[in-house]
Amino acid sequence: MAFLELKDVSKGYRSNGTLTPVLRDINLSIEKGEFVAIVGYSGSGKTTLISLIAGLTRPDTGSITLDGAEITGPSPERGIVFQNYSLLPWLTTYENVYLAVDQVFRSWSAAQKRAHTEKYIEMVNLLPAREKRPAELSGGMRQRVSVARALAADPRILLLDEPLSALDALTRATLQGEIARIWDQDKNTVVLITNDVDEGILLADRIIPLTHGPDATLGPAVPVEIPRPRDRKAMNQDPHFKQARHQVMDFLLGVGVRHRKTVTRKLHLPDIEPEDLSYGKPSPFSLFRRGPLRSKEFKKERVEIET
Amino acid sequence: MIKQKVNIDWLVLPMLGALVVIGIWALWSSLPGTNLPSPLKTWEVSKLYIEEPFAKRGELDQGILRFTWYSLVLVAKGYALAILIGTPLGFVLGLSKMFAKSFDPIIQVLRPVSPLAWLPLGLVLFEKSEPAALFTIAVCAMWPTVLNTAVGVRSVPQDYINVARVLKLSRVKTLFKVLIPATMPYMFTGFRLSLGIAWLVIVAAEMLTGVPGVGGFLWQEYNSLIYEHIILCIVTIGLVGFILDRLMSLVEARFKSI
Image (tube, rainbow over all chains, first blue to last red; front, side):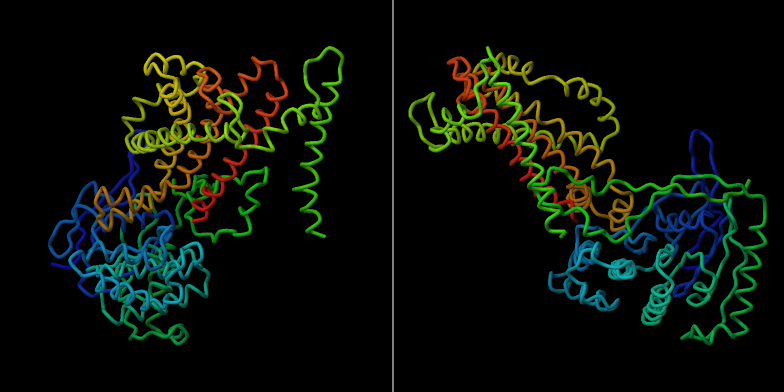
């Protein structure tokens, strides 16, 4: 039996009494120490899939087991790096990581916990930003804190939910390198969700396409047989890379070309924009009050969905 | 150049506005047959109270800041009561849908009731003027804190709650490590609005109960036909309210800059 096993998993969301299927017939086996990337369109249910593995939502049918034990709820043994970082903005880098350490290693002494926290902050090269709050950090740095927090809890499996998709291309490349380096050190089991096929091939042992949602399911797995450490530049010429890329793209494009229609949906933007510090510090005796600072930001987004 | 612009915006224009208002006041007071004292006369009659702000010449004849201090102490007590009751109530309203649905209508009905209406009920309940005034302040000033806290709790991002769930934080730890800090900016907005209302209520409460303070002084001077002091009291009440609001804004801004 595989380390992480999803059997006939399906999941739908109920709204106004109608059930919209998101995922169906998901079968996935991941071995211990394997790095698997799941690639799919936005809105195809990738985040739902990782929430299921994390235990944040329960499947409608089927079962998910980790090391033989059924997953019934969230737990720090399945560390998750959220797409929008999900750092607590009132805590510093150190405190954000320490919160996880403190919770997971309750029997440790304070000194042990401190040292452990420091170790992981150092691992993601953030010691200089130790006492900074998330608002003072760039997107890439925030995501590193999030990675450090997940790793510091010593998870048995690491779930990365589009960790780099909100970053610019250069930061993205740097962080991909760091993820590869960290994985090389401890060979933890990793599930990476991404919408970037190249990223999946660069990092993973196996890359699995997810068909277009709703009602998405996993396509055939494509093994990536490129020796590590992988070099981004040399890889582009590698026949294995070309072949893997071709296979995944072929599948994704094949299932993607179907009837689509465009709808406008409300999108909750994650709190990832650096705060504009020039705004909001008028004289305390000014007659005009500043507006609400943490109002929820909503934005309309046009997305294509299948009919 | 920019510096000058700021000076005009924040100094010259507000002063101009104040001058216009004082001008209208002066004109009005010069109309034949009016009882409104002129600005100059107001200053002459009030001078003693401003120049010796903490003097105590008798129970009903004290410096203006001494009266203000009495009022502030009373407000502080009532406001503390409002926050102590309002914050937990807001949390429960925000956390429990059932509780919110049960109590939201009654809150919406009680919220617009004027302090003048609560005070007699307070007198009936507590039979003494000071507890009645405290009751009135608390019951009127509580609502902004209650409602803002409830909104704040409801709008805690799901991401933060997911973090707590993945780390398996206990309920108490989730409350203190995630919910309360995330709600803090909303809570302080509520606190600031509540303080404004508490200060509004105190004057009405003092006028009706005769508790010594700036509102009580105002009412007593009206009865003694010293109209200049009414204006002195109005200006004092306004300035104190303004300063309280600014001070709370400073505290609020600290929590919002997170």
